[in-house]
Image 1 (cartoon, rainbow, N blue to C red):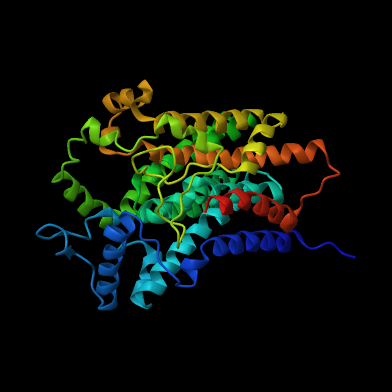
Image 2 (image 1 turned 90 degrees about the vertical axis):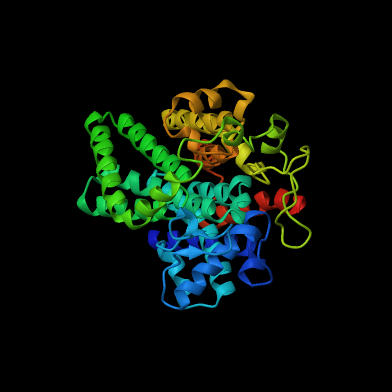
Length: 416
């Protein structure tokens, strides 16, 4: 009996990730409902409806009369007018397009993380573990009511994947892919998550070059990223220029006050929720109920990493061949956690005062992106290490992904 080809196994593994993501958001996919917590109801749905109305009539959404006495819409980076997936609004009914795009980006997060895991030389089951840990982790799930952050976080693994591919091949084709992916991730409309993703991927690419003792490769990667950034600035100028003018007239031109920037930091008591799932779903559609142990509604409804992910993260230290990479992901994850605590540690205040541009961003909990992403890669490392320790236990392809999905889903189902 011949074995299934490698490409077929990968298709099956990706298909399993897709089905898992679609099943998790089946209410949205089936148009049973729309997540309406916070910004979704008050900002994103009305904004996307304006975009839909404009595109349906063949116009760009230059202005909205519904904020204050009217305000520019196209100049708002979050309008999404130039983001290619949003062009489906020109040819589809509104709610079908809105819900479909939300589910699509949720699935993107898992699929791109799987591809990044494979490019990082993980097996299918380990890459599947990374995809599930990221897609069903508390951070990413919480973004289903923060649309532009969801879009940028969905593209983040693709950014790291494209950077790693180019670091490995340094070809014209991989550079073209890098520019295309970076442009899509940037135009998705959330600059901070985009910048963090590029920093993550660039740092990991340098770590891989150092592992291969290639200083020239690291320098080449830095030059490539710089050149790609220049090209992206040109390609996205139609969005960047009006946004820059708009921002120059806003209260962000001189930076936010420290109180505004530091708002929505992770309360230290919520650290327990890294291991214990909070209540983050409402009684009907799983969106909106605030986490337990806090009196103020948090920016992220959940920071839960997942029961299986925590076990695999602990096992990552067993992989001696990836020790440098594990240290990198552990350091990045810890950095994200420290920054998310805001003024509970001195680091956030130091960066606010001394790092140019840092004062223009707000909500320290956003830095948990680094923690959620790193946790997924450490989970993949842990599963790879356990498989190396005990080869008799085979968690290949769909079986491995299915088992991890079931066990990871138990605490998620319990919490909702």
